[in-house]
Image (cartoon, rainbow, N blue to C red):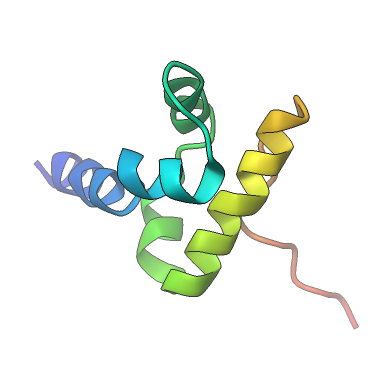
Length: 79
């Protein structure tokens, strides 16, 4: 039940309307992008709106170039 709620949350945040608007992709390519680049629940929950939308735009550009998804979390810098 918890997993279903988490999936619904990701579906709500990473929805076709938003992704279409930010990426310019249309079906069926949009569906492929959304399956390949679907964010994790933790990422969707913790990232703010600006960063989430920037991640969608950046990911769409990677997708259009035929590149695989990049890690959603950057490695912490070592000092």
